Image (cartoon, rainbow, N blue to C red; front, side):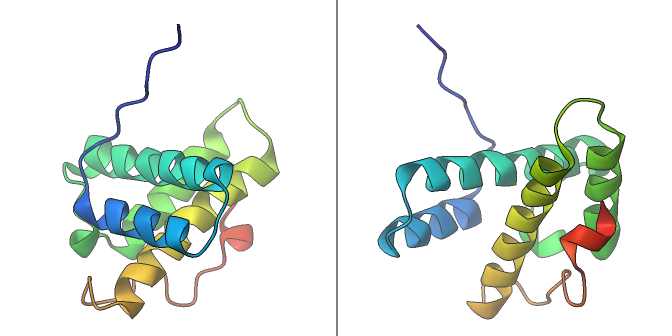
Length: 113
């Protein structure tokens, strides 16, 4: 039996995932979204010592993009999708007043990888 993935605790991610389900996203999309955002949070935690979305900066987004670009496994499109999901999540948090500033403003994931 496969083990269940345990994500870093993040109430902001949980709100976004719940909202995704309520908008009719498929379970496959919702699970992928959750996994990709968790990968971003884990990167922030390992490299910057926190995974609080309110403290995320452009530098952390650039660092995650660089990390993805330097990974030897995975297709370019998948790496871009991971960055897009993290970007969409942060933008959603900003638009819903959950974080104070939008660290993704003016960034295009396809240009970063």
